[in-house]
Length: 336
Ligand code: AMP
Ligand code: TRP
Image 1: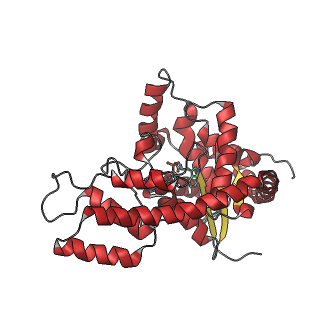
Image 2 (image 1 turned 90 degrees about the vertical axis):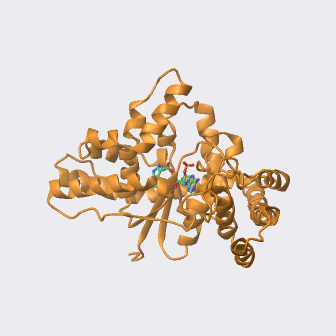
Image 3 (image 1 turned 90 degrees about the horizontal axis):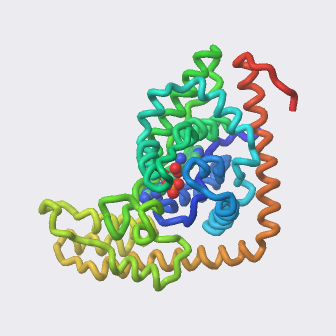
């Protein structure tokens, strides 16, 4: 049996992958593959909680698979959530181990409920409310030790731990280990157009940098990044400048980071130099990603088959857990 610690993470197929996702979470997914047993999901059931169309959902699912492979995730570690329907079954069981009150306090729910209300005639699905319970099922069904995510997912991980504790108490056995979040240095990348809000797709195109962008677009976005708006208290680094330094460091440009930070400290930093360094760091990463994406897409038929096979393989672990969970909870079971 594999004795390595287990890592689980997931991302929704809802469009482009940006540098907030990459530096905040997905880069960690790639690095962790060296030392842990890793399972990474494309969570299409979660993507149905906001307004969607079936055509876009299936397109985005494959697109995200190609994107993840292009940035370095191994196809054998990937699964598509709807190919492992046990997640939904475990979600139901966990619904009964989670309080309505706690779900009502989830900030992601409150934010998305507001967005959903604005964009779709006031329709807020019960799925959106229940989303964190499905996320807990994603994590616990693989008995994961670690969950690499951005820090906006803290609250969901805490809820997952609470569900695990309540389940364990109810069945009288320490069945689930309590998972922990794993964070990168860049736990929160901000929008370059408005560094007071986080980089995200939902805020619109100018608020995120697609990891597969062409060099011109990246340079343009970084050139127009907000630096100093004059309202930062003296002696403090402004959010825009701080975010550019975060990006530079995350892009692995450490010598430039140190040199430019020295300039900042001595008051001789020129923002154009900082922007230039950040743009070149991102351009060179994006060029590698674009090349790998082209290769992946050129083999897309094989890639799809491979990910269907890895999903079936990963499903076996989920089936083992669900069988034990039902047995412990007093639910009649089928034999797989
Ligand atoms: P999302 O795009 O919101 O579905 O997020 C996918 C993953 O990327 C999650 O682990 C998030 O925590 C992470 N993430 C999203 N936006 C950012 C950001 N601006 N900075 C850091 N991490 C992020
Ligand atoms: N809620 C996560 C996000 O918004 C996505 C997600 C779903 C997830 N299931 C998960 C992340 C399980 C980690 C583990 O990014």
